[in-house]
Length: 366
Image (cartoon, rainbow, N blue to C red; front, top):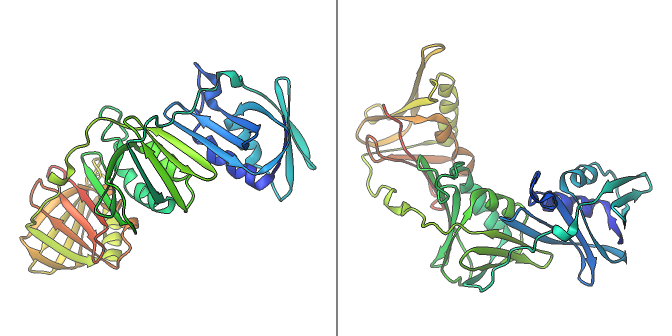
């Protein structure tokens, strides 16, 4: 195999594909590699960790067709160091590949391509729809940090994607907090509901183009396809919790305050949080303010009031300050609302005037 590629395009393609390779694999070393296929369909880069897989097309000139597999991490380091413009040549012979340019050359040992597995692909499409890649990226990256890192309950380590009535939703929860992001989609879309492991979902959406992506779903797998590539992932088949039941329908206390005031007060107060990272939030209706307080026996204590419009009961709740700060970068409005359902019940955080994002956090024991 001999192929000629643009430095920048090849470097970007390798970075995109490498995230789907295993970091290392003792049982099947080729899973830690990227397969480069040059043939009638052009030049394609492939990688898979058996959970996800990618087939990505890159522009180049084929002097001699062929197939080779190279270690993904090494190839990414080499291509990531490319500078300037121009072309490089990949030449495969025996058990090595020579990567050469006017500046120099590198020689890499190959992996056994014969062991490279077939990329998973939905066998019989149970659902098929098209969405902009930019929309999928926004939906997933907004909620994915709320998914559980534990593998004990795979459904909690996943992102729920669904559509109904022209609105696409993404949801993730680790049982301590929950994020729901909605996005209206122009045109009609067939209702669907799929559960993707959060890590897979993050890797996938960071790979997709901003333009339309066709999504194919069967019982166990999902594929995202566009003219230059296709990414596949396994799906989680465990039922997702009925999270709508967790979202309170009524609140005992509500407050509206400036987002920048909430952020600044929380940041200062969290310095005094204890080993459990606990801060307290108090709704004080008569004083029209929300009070942030924390106490650490080794550092000291802090109490700070923020002007707010408060309705309902005066109430104080404790939270992990990291969970309270998580939605701040996602809220784009000037004001936000805090709505408490009561002692031991969830707190709902929203941007005023923005109905697309809902963030729910459970209080800690007082």
